[in-house]
Image (cartoon, rainbow, N blue to C red; front, side):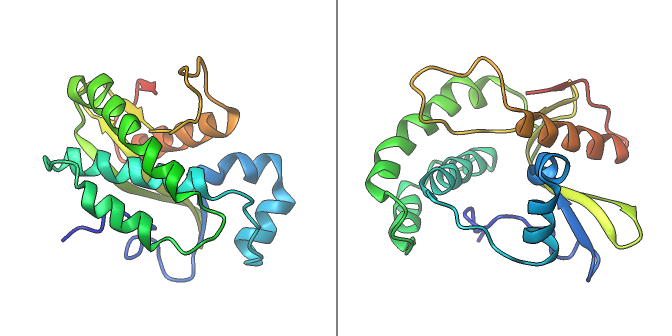
Length: 188
């Protein structure tokens, strides 16, 4: 049974003892190098003031992965996951309220009409001995060469652009796919 709530961290792909520059942290690597150094190399964990958006995103990503595997959205599994969250900083009621319309919008406005050939693929490339870049890419269409990354939002209107951090993340995935010999034409 697949654990749809467990992030694919590259275990078994990244060589033991290697340092991974995460695709999602690439912007921090360039823009806040000392902060990246403290969290990644010194293992000094930052306090995240509000984990609710992170956990909401986990639920939406889990539903998307279920869809990719041609399974119905397992709302009971999602509810069980939400119930298992122990952090007092997480607003479980908000997640329970927001994840269903987000999942339905993702399915009806994107997944139902988009060809995806890979989902939640962990990509890794060593750039120096013992140092590499990698991460788990949300979706890829090898026919059109499109890398997709799903983002949840609290906004009632869709964003018209994405942040520098998301741009770095998608460009990193595009580079990683190209290193695997898979041409990339677009990022979304």
